[in-house]
Image 1: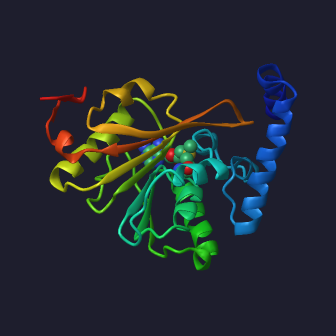
Image 2: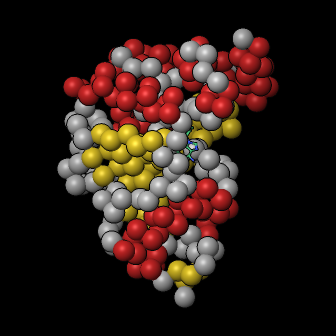
Image 3: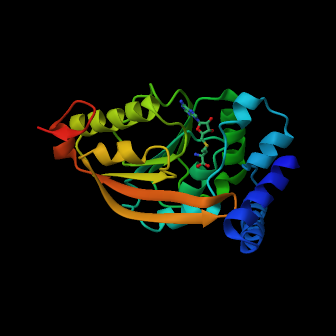
Length: 242
Ligand SMILES: C[S@@+](CC[C@H](N)C(=O)[O-])C[C@H]1O[C@@H](n2cnc3c(N)ncnc32)[C@H](O)[C@@H]1O
């Protein structure tokens, strides 16, 4: 309750009374979509379930509207592209992705408690999804070997720092061994903006800021395309081209 009050005060300070309207729109969109799909993926639900701090601390589901906006800015080759959510949490992004004609959706999540909830959520909604091939892998994404079938990597703020560098290196090496068209959907780049610019084999093809009440400064989102030839000629971790 006190954190909600704190958020409201911060909102009014940053965005005025209009921020309260945004908060209501955001909360309504979240609850409506959860109810419509019959799934439970919000952070609030996780806290209510009394799961330990190490679980709740890392978790936040992508706003439904932000995910759809990002999906609207990528092109999918139906029944060919494979989507991977790095840090799948309770499965919201995997479920929303599976509403598109992906050949396969993979979610990688390190916390067993979230993997269980993720699988339960998928089971509840599977009959309504276009893509039925959904795999939830319990693994640390940092040491996970990216399957060469993956063509769309989705990130919503799973972690930062060296872990993220390892993920991008896994993408680069997979592209070198199996060159293919590859898209990165990165939602909330705030903690990785500088590093991201260094990857010369990635080109920014779209960017938008999604502003919503729980993140008054907005979520910076980018869509990047990978160039396998450039990925093959990169040296070191600064992404420079030979
Ligand atoms: C911000 S949530 C994103 C949830 C979901 N992808 C979405 O968009 O709604 C980040 C998730 O990444 C997971 N995560 C953090 N570090 C991880 C790691 N090293 N390997 C796999 N998952 C990780 C957290 O447990 C959490 O569920």
